[in-house]
Image (cartoon, rainbow over all chains, first blue to last red):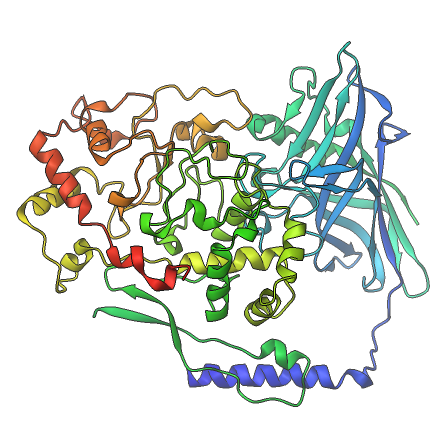
Length: 262
Length: 353
């Protein structure tokens, strides 16, 4: 115990010393410029928009919400070195106002399609890796906070299936083809729905102090429900685990493509 | 006494040091036993992400009893988890939540949760006490608390900002609310029943002949699932109370563990509750369908229903159930009552006042 005490004391001293002497910080590494990853929502080639009918699988669908967690974002450079973005939990969304907790309070309408990174080391990046959803460690314990994870944005479920965890992705709206429109809701959120996507870039993303780098990805909403019969299954959630798996696989294999590298 | 003291060092002053560079004094306090674990129990394994501290436990206790944690400011955790009932509430499906609507499940007793490491809720829908706490807090039929508003309410209190800062070194936030409650819950250890004293050879540990016969029967028929020393195996079983688990509703409540695992083998399975303090935790089963211990014993004796996922222990030698004689039923119940831990039911460390 004595040793432990001494080590702790040393650590505390180190931390304290460090925090007291950062006035002469002469960094030699090249400071990077800003790096932006855009997730541009589309339906096929058209730009995605809320409250606008789109024809998908022969049905006319109108959306009010597209939300998904992008996590564990990584960039891999030409030398195969990986930069992992710290605190990597980003909520990408385009949504009308949401009644959270059965209407207890309102999450405002919002459109957020980009992630701005400020500390990417300079380099030539050839690959991007990210996951859709929240890893099991964070998903199973909502008290471990990181990045944008929060219980306040309506992307958790406590009554959804009484499995206290995050909603990984949500696409909701209505099918306006039938005379009486049918509400549709496509969600993922089981630990087994966590998917990692790896995309090799057609041209390298060059990050340096001189330029602002930008990677534009297409997010094809039509592909989220690829091969899924929304007429037979307008609501995909915990009671439709097989379909949730299919949606998760769609996110992995079909939804994301590179639009351009700037 | 036969206690091993769990020695947990409390580091204080770390947060303090981070913005004060002049004070490098060793801030260790003397060892304080935060929980005591008896010899007949497994080791206490603290949470890695939320280790016990004296301040965290005390804050958690205050929150546990605080009605401001509900949307109506009329319901606390303790409303449905009452100490004199081993932190259960005596109803089959409680209507004490703020909507007044009966809940879908029986309020479980809170006993030895530090060892409940295989899922909480009757179907294991929550992986740890921290996440679990969000469910009753937020659910519209339970405490229905607006989590954003809760921060404002607690910040307006004369003491909470300081207590949170002492426990977690930062301003009040949702995560630390559930962390504090979880810390308090992990200290809820019940291990001083007459049965425990008998097992540990302590004074007062005397079982009479009827109780001893009951213990023998329990060893033979009950402990396979209600395994010692916790008197639960923390697993999920179909104990033959239903045959039809079809449920097309979104919540799939009748499907039991299946709704969490999506595994057909888990249809109709529910978490084994501990037998500890069972005398105080009526009514029984996930929906509180059995009002008395007599009815429970009757079920295991002659009431077991066959289905594909029925636990094999309940179906032996081509026979469903254990066909206890009237004497055996009485002996079993006499034994079960030796599992009442009166100290636990009145311990000031777990009481509001």
